[in-house]
Length: 508
Image 1 (cartoon, one colour):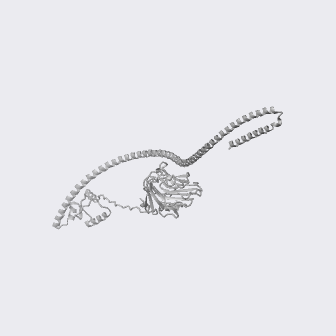
Image 2 (image 1 turned 90 degrees about the vertical axis):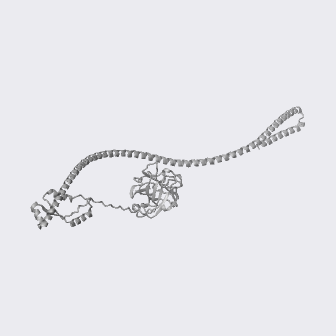
Image 3 (image 1 turned 90 degrees about the horizontal axis):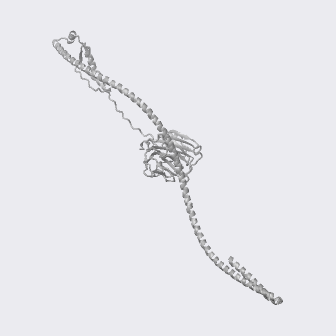
């Protein structure tokens, strides 16, 4: 359009010049006196007009050429427009792809930051565990040296005691030999006494046949004193009475005589008395130990997690309906591993560690972490909970002052304050037992799996008193107002088993 306007302007200028020349030509008769000069001037004007015509023609040709160029420019402009639109579409697609990649990178970076935090925490825990293990090993080595020194002293004492026992054994052996020799002498005396008694019987029978009193005659002739011996009936009565309390190893000889003739010789009397003073051996009655009766019968059921696997976990039918400002978690634990693992994990859209109770395999083995709103957490000591026996655990938290209480086997082990003061645990999250969630309902880690038994698990959205905790741990009943328990279990995954056992002693 610019070139066309320029062409019209040039045509108007040329018309004006031609009109000027025509006017001059018409005025020529009026100036005959100046005819020669005017003729020359007209000739020059004609030459100038031709030169101007040539210049105009050349200019018009250039304008035509430029007009063709403008047509080419329009087509080129249309091509460039289409290329620009295509490039715009490609840029838009590239922008969308880039934004998607940036969002993925952002989420991956966030996950990496969380894992980095966990790794840093694990590294700090491992460092702390190594220091504690070094101190523990040092103490154990010192204790072992002390025990070894004590053991060496005890061994020396035992050796001296053994020497004294050997000397005592030698004395006993000498006494046994002396006793055997004495028994042999007594047997010889008894044999001699029997022969004397037989002679006396013969004498008595001879005197009876002659009608004389044998006792007086024997007293006068031989100086023998008559000693009365217990009758057989009385002896049997005494033996039955003794049998009620003991059973002799040897049965006493049955006496065929009611009177024993005792000589004035003392060894014979001593031999008879020694025969009646043999030692007795008592039987120790076997006492039956009754089995312990069930005392804790408020459990209801038990969950068995047999192995460390990312598949073994449990979900619930429902979750929290309103935000939580107070919380009490109680359960019976029987751990079969050398670490605790994850008991409970509660995750929301904004935080996958909103409420976690866990102990990692790679961290400090004797510690349980209570997490409320990651990254805020507290470390609680497990003490002797990893011994394969049943233990009762209660953890209580309040946002009013950020106070928390940790009970283990009815004893208050730890307490504190200013832990997430004024914080609210939001509702609508995912609650899982046995695994720790890195995203809602997934991203499990085998090192954080729980291995063992959970019995009587329950959760309250209020603070339990120490009396309620004591009653719960001693089997006196379940406090009112529980929000979640094992009765609310929805699904079990992996090889988890849900076993009904009313009493804890029956949860095997």
